[in-house]
Length: 208
Image (cartoon, rainbow, N blue to C red; front, side, top):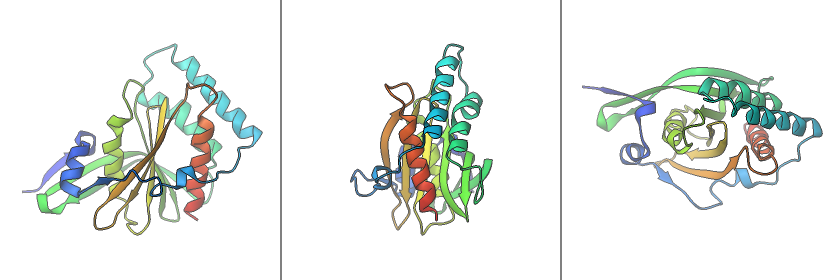
């Protein structure tokens, strides 16, 4: 009998035990987020400064829920990155499923925002309301990334609760392996959204 599980109910331990998922801590494995990145334009910086100011305003009127995070923080960043324009296209709340064949298990879920370019997944974005840590979204985004049909190429993801941002790289070989970037925080000194945007733009170029 096949058992169906919801992606949001899967934890990291389950993926390790049932899919052989391994975390790689070698900096060379996920080199892309540390590559020499292009500087932002003044217009891009000003846009990100407005996003940050919008966040400071929003936190004074809690709760800051997931839909608000997507509308006021994630969507503007994707817009500034040019990911709403051709040759990219966006799919929101996309259904998917993956199978753990030996266990007779199907995991299904819905991706928050999927950015596509010529059938390459540029990034999968899983947003959480700000009361959740991004660690709570990590297993869920890895489930989605494991469902990428283009298994020959790496899949990149971004998980955020609107305050904290962390990039993920997944490579699926005989054993799927993943690694994480440093964490970027919207209310740190300066504006760490600059780094988030630089990395997003770079990953989009890799989809060539």
